[in-house]
Amino acid sequence: MRTTKQLVKSGLLAVLTAGTFIACQQNNKQGNNSPAAAKGDSVASNSSFIIAYVDIDTVEAHYEYFKEKKSELEKKQQAIDNELQANVRALQNEAADFQRRANGMTQSEGEATQRALYNKQQQLEGKAQAMRSQYAEQENKFNEELQKRLNDFLAKYNSNKRYAYILSYRSGASNVLYKDDKYDITNEVIKGLNEANASTEVKK
Picture 1: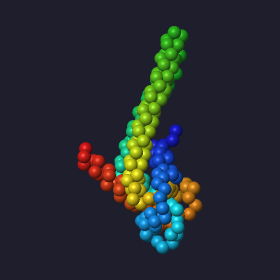
Picture 2: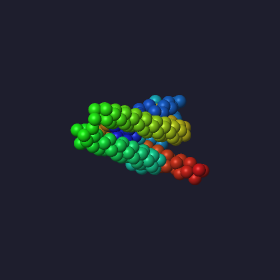
Picture 3: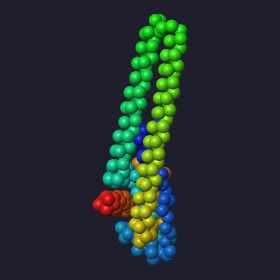
Picture 4: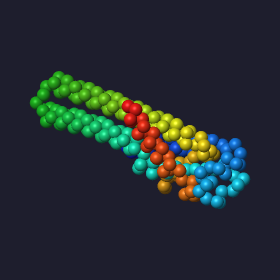
């Protein structure tokens, strides 16, 4: 079973995959007036589009909403694991006790005890499945909310800047072979996301 960290990271990476938000420029003038073009003189004047990127590792480290929800999910996962492990130990203890007392039982008593242990095992398996399904629903809900927050922010963020693509980048796990730091909008995105999150919290 994947850990919470892997689940959450995969969710965030899916949200910020290449082409998450596409807003093609209408003409060359718009392209030359974008902030990315202003960062350097190497952008060609006849460029048809500009690509920016967001560093996922940095977002995970500094986006407060992500960190809070990730911590909550990890605590829930740990609580599930602890409860199930305690249930398994209790069932194992009952089984061990049955083995110690088996010689002193009648056949009917032994069969009844075995049936009871089997039923408890089945119940425990059902409980584990239900708890994990509930956790998966919570994790999916988090990913959906995260995607909505990112999409809403990027839609506003890019309304004036007119990037054709906003790509995701993760060190050691990215299809991006080369990146120019002047097109790195990560800090701006994190700042905007955190401000939006703080504003939402105040309204609550």
